[in-house]
Image (cartoon, rainbow, N blue to C red; front, top):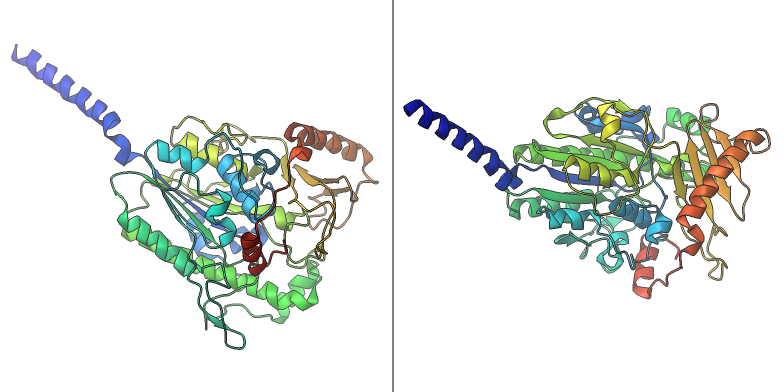
Length: 463
């Protein structure tokens, strides 16, 4: 009789422990940190083989993370790319194709809305007003730190920028507000934190008297010449771009040290990426948005899982930023109520699937059909890109089409449209399927309000 009673109580307490884990398991659910370095192209990171040591911390972090070598943005423009991350849809689907537009009539929840509804504490700190609340990217975030921006610095001839004239904050301020929010949340509940860093976006306002690691020396100039960085008057800016990336890497190291000290890393999924790259003078263009070449489309991507899962793995299959949200949802064992177009990356990481799609698709930002405002480097019509393995095809309705073999011509210098007609027709058919399915001509242009136009002009955007 006594043995039966003991067995009964053992079984009872075992079941109690099991179900209590279900009832009170919220504290054990993983937290998520999404970090986006704005305008950081993949090939200027030493993590990916760049000859300058721009990202020593990311190299160390890679030993604890899964590194993706072929990650693509669906658009090389800040606000649209972020909406693609948070909706898991291409820009023509969510309808935001330009900085300054709003997310309108979107009936599905954004990533932060899903997590908030399921009990995650949601916070965000953005480094630029390009992602200000007006655009509706803040949906689902209980805490969303955009304004006011604390950028106060003297540069050049003692020019002081105040928040009325400048709409960005440096990495230190982003991290300051992130720490403040983390110090105030309930440690027994999981959190979702989104951090956006603007420091590698032109113009590069690093902290006053910040010591530059890199100089425009002879070796660097030879590298730029060899790799067709053709804008000689911009070489100093390219050098400063590398210094900005090194600065970001330093700040990320400090933030991770804080997370470790606060014991916030052991059960946290961390994703580090960029929204798009930068021309830096290749293809005779410094900025982003106008073209769809590799320097603007390929981005870094690291995923650090709790408990060191798959640490040190490198994935060569091509992926897209639209795949981040479904990856997070699957890892957290949450139902996809977002209706994601993207696919979870977990099968790639587990090795159960060699690739998640055959081709990566991207499209260009919106330009007005008629250039009444005399916009410099204005481009008419629609433009899209398709990367299928070693082949890259750029379609345009009002500009010349382009075809490249990336294995033989990684810098995209030799257009093969006429030399490889069979491959051209094959990829043209595939991209037209995307164009029809996404209905890219259905997107209605939005009117940007004057206050937002002022912000964009301050940040270097012409409209």
